Structure formats: C-alpha cells, structure tokens
Amino acid sequence: MDVERIYREESGRILATLIRLLGSFDLAEEVMQEAFAIAIEQWPKQGPPDNPRAWLVSTAHHKAVDLLRRRTRFDSKRDELQRLAEVEQHFSEAEESMLRQDEVGDDRLRLIFTCCHPALSLEAQVALTLRTLCGLSTEEIAHAFLVPLATMAQRLVRAKQKIRDAGIPYQVPARPDLKERLEAVMLVVYLVFNEGYSASSGDAVIRRELCAEAIRLARLICEMLPAESDARALLALMLLHDSRKVARVDGDGDAVLLEDQNRSLWNQNEIREGLTLLDSALRGGAAGAYALQAAIAAHHARASRPQDTDWKQIAALYEALLRVQPSPVVELNHAAAVAMAEGPGAGLRLLDALERKAELCDY
Amino acid sequence: MQYLLLIYGNDEAFGKMSKAEQEGILQEYMEFSKSIAQSGHYRGANELAPVTTATTVRVRDKKRLVTDGPFAETKEQLGGYYLVDAKDLDEAIGLAARLPNARWGSIEIRPIVPHDMP
Image: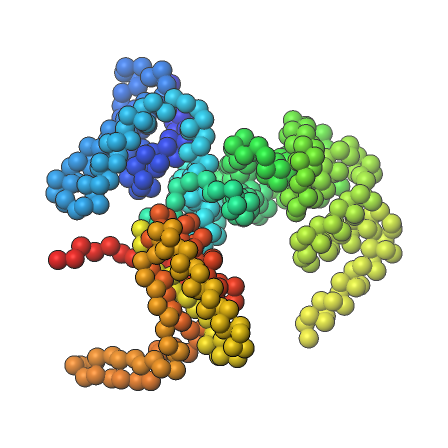
C-alpha cells in the first residue's frame, strides 16, 4: 500500500473529518501529519490496515487526545480543558461514523463552506481551499499564484485565526442562505480552475493540478447537493474547457487558437460527460453565467470541424451572457460571434459601437 | 460566543429625515430589541448621542490632551451598539442583517474576547 498515494487521495477527507472532531485547523493538520508519519513507519512492516482512512483518522485522533492532555497538564486554561472534554466525547461517535461514506462527504462539504466563507477575503478563501481541501502545500499555492512563500504562509495563518476567533462555523449553511453561500463557493472553484487553465506563467504541473482539483471539488458539490443545477453547469463548463487542454498548446508551449486546434485531440470522455451534465443542469433551470458559458463551450465541442460551428446560436448565447455578466471581454466575444454568423460587417458595427462607448468612458 | 454589533450610519442623513421616518426607525429598533430578547440573544444595547458631542482624550508623557470630536473624519459614524449572544458568526450575521441601519449604513461585527474576571 502506497502511503504517498493515500496522502494525495485521502488527506483532504481525513483533514475535513479531523477538523470537525477537533474543532481546530492547526491541531487537525498537526496530528494528521503525525498519523501519516506513523503509517510510513508501520505499514511496510505490519502490512496496511483494511481501511487506511479509518486507521489514519483514529490514529490522528488518539494523537490529538494525547497532545491535549499533555498541554493541559502545563497550561490548565479553561478553554483547553473544555476542548479536551469535547474531543474525548467525540471519540466514540467518531469511531462509529468514520466508516460511513456519507459522513465523510458531509465533512468535506462543511469544510468547503468554511473555507469559502464571505467573512474571509477572496484570496484567503482560495488559498485555504487549496491547502485544506486539495492538500496542496503552502509552497505549491504560493507558486501557483506567484506570491512569495512568506506572504502565502501569513495569509493562511491569518485566515485560520479568523475562523477560530470570529467563530466562523463549520457547517453547511441553512436553506435561506445556501444559494448565496454556494455562489461564493462556486466562485472560488472557478477561480482555481481558471488559474490553472489560463495562466501563461508558473509551473505547468501545478497548473494542471489546479484544474483537476477544481473539477474534483465541483464533483463533490454536485454529488452532495444534487438539487443545485448551477453547480452542475459549472462542472460542465470546466469539463468542456478541460477537454481541450492537450490541443490548446503546441509543442513549444504556445497557445493554439480554437479554429486551429487538432480536434481529434479533444478528450471525448470529458465532452460527453460535460454535455450530459449541461443538459441536466439546463433542465434543472440553470440559467446563470456558468450555464451560458457552458452552452457556448458545448457548441464548440459538438462541431467536429470549425466550419460546422453554430455561430448563430453562439452569438445569441453571448447576448444573453451580456445581460447576466456585462464585461468588455464578453462584448468582444459577442461581436466576434456575430461576425462569424452574419458576416464581418455586422461584427464590425458592434465593435465600432463598443469603441465609441470606450471613448465616452475615457472622458 | 458574544459579539458586539457596531451600528454605523450617517448622522446628517438621519437628521434630515422627517419626524415620522425617524420614529418609524426607532420603532423598528424597539421591536428588534424585544424580539432578540425573547430569542435569548440580547445582552445589552445603547444608542449613542451624535458624533458632534464626542470628545477624545489621550495621555502622552503623563499629560492629558483633550480634543473635540473623534480621531478620524469619516462619512459614517458609530451610532450605537448591541451586545449579543450567538452560537457562531453566521448567527451573528443573521442578527446584524436585521438591524435597520444595515439597509443604508453598515454593521461591524466584532467577537468579544473572553477574560476571566478576578
């Protein structure tokens, strides 16, 4: 059993469960590292346990209780004693619930909502999500966002302090707030994806990782909140973009325009899944920016040759997108789609209008 | 946990409102207080006199320096506060969002640091 592989695949879930049981990000991280260290030591000799995750959670939990007992002996502050009592009480419940898959999924979902709480800055939300849910190291995150390591470390420390001191809860928000809070979560997920997808600098391996992690998080959200059609639209959008990842850069690492891409390189599995998800999202009533962008990407994905692209539909979708999310980039894309659908004249007229508006804004 | 909800607003704008409007807002505050007292969140509250009555004192080199007004000039002034019990930040945000001033001013939510009194 490969401890490193388990770390990659399971550390996010293990950490989520430990944070719930221990009520502290730092303590959870500390004891999880210790449990993995013991695993590296023991498993090769004694063979891996039947359920590695359960073993790791329970070992980490024992460590936490030991640690808190030792600390309270020296420092008998009331809140430390109280925490110890709580952790010990959680102990038997934990042993029971650990094996139940649904509880574990719930833990990760709770953690997403904690990490993407609007009381944290957006930068901190992104960093904390990558650190705790995706298991990226502080160094990797600093690298991905081109920020000095010390700055990123500081950002994470502050975010964890705020969660603790301001009482940011570890829970999935109640119904009336869920929609609003889910939007914040989706924004973070999409930011992570875009950072991996569109950054022209930075480590290529880490960037691929960011895309994969964003897709994994979106899958988890869709699985846990199946009624949220906008989340399905977001997952569809990311899959449809990700399907072109091999075709969109050439051998020298330069970007290849959509019409010049070798479409046989597009990942058909991702396209199929993306199209199915989009279909179900639209039937579920998704009509926001993610759904519209996914629908645009779907038209490109369906065209096996550039000349088969349904530009009329794409132009109409951009027009709808302009109403939901007006921006100069969307206006440009809209003009380009109109030019493809109705001829260059129509597109140029839109560009002229756009230019005049820009000049007006300058004054 | 305990949180202090600091109510910010524009004194001048409030002064320009009609008597009826001002009374309506006061009424809303009364009802809010009653409601959160019943739900067990209320710990205390006060309205503050306008910022024109404020005085600032500093002691430097054992000398007292008393000046008129608050330290910084800002558009929004602290107009009052609620001290509430809430189980977490989400609950505190829920309470703060019900305050009338949240609709035109802003509410700052600050956790209280617990200290053991001797």
